[in-house]
Length: 234
Ligand code: DX5
Ligand code: ZN
Image (tube, rainbow, N blue to C red):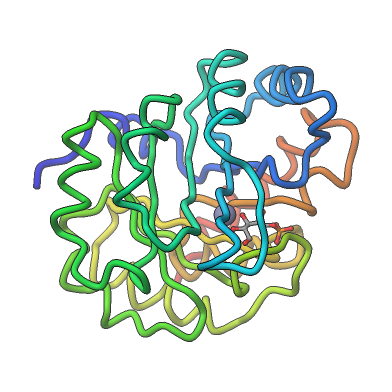
């Protein structure tokens, strides 16, 4: 599969810090999104949960629509749901630019990756901490994005699991320098450098990002931290 234009554009801006809206103030969603855009953020990460694949519920289609109305930023929608094939059309229509689903629920993902592309979005595959990278290796060249979970999905604010670093290294080595390789869960000031050195070029951050009020300063600091770690990549 050739490369998707949006993914090509995003690669020009790596490393990307992608705030996860799960940790934002939903009572002031529009203001949050505006402030993130003003801070220089390019990608917003939106976590969709179904109470089945993960033991929690979160953002659904109307919230993705509301965020889309509020901004032109890239919407990176992470589907932590058991039946992504039933909903990708609706999430695309709601405004998702990148649609990522889990290998654990779609072990043969080629058809769905193609379908996402066919809908005009970038396609991503994700894997949980206990899942082997071997499960997704055959599909790397079909993905615009690979999302390595560094916690069991379902909740923000969990502790980073170092097993993710080995996976990032292995995936970066197999996929080469071009792939958008994202890491999600427990990423913050203490873990950014290790993630980037292991090969991540997209850093999803929920609680660690929204902990601070001054988004612009915090975003700059985190991006700088990720950028300088890049030069120390092994
Ligand atoms: C967890 C979600 C994450 C979550 C990360 O299931 O996929 O995107 O928002 O939150 P933090 O950064 O707080 O671990
Ligand atoms: Zn996520």
